[in-house]
Length: 150
Ligand code: CA2
Image (cartoon, rainbow, N blue to C red; front, side):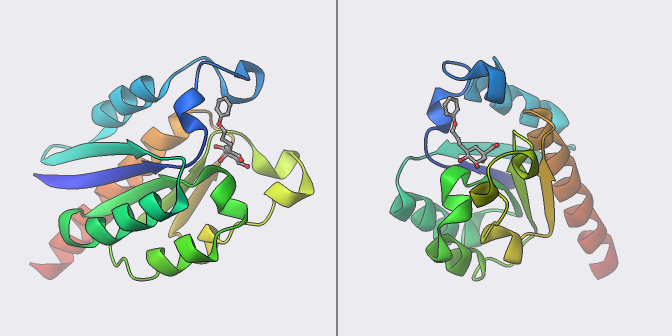
């Protein structure tokens, strides 16, 4: 099994419980189910969420050895964290950045992403379906690179 890590930043533990007009009614458990359903055969999902920047950085470091790709919604750290960008720059497999809301229709401070300097793809405004699209893209990229190597 190849593992895709799905990392989630601060406040996303409240998904489905607050501000449904922006983030919808689905919870992180629903995101896990959606990602598992989107996975190709021979892939599995490890979904993690933290409100702490250092924890997310530690998980990125661990993922270097244990995962074949990453879907990341860094939440507010998207717009602030050079430290998460630096950690992602040490991670070689494909990275897809996901935002549930259409950040470019929102406040100007949400329009810049440090993580986009590293991400291989960026998805915004598809609701939680964006995570599934990110997982499908990771599977495709990993399968293509495996085929190219054989
Ligand atoms: O649209 C996204 O996915 C965001 O990454 C969500 C972040 C926000 O800071 C980014 O600009 C865009 C906020 C996550 C907060 O999540 C909540 C979920 C439910 C209720 C309250 C907060």
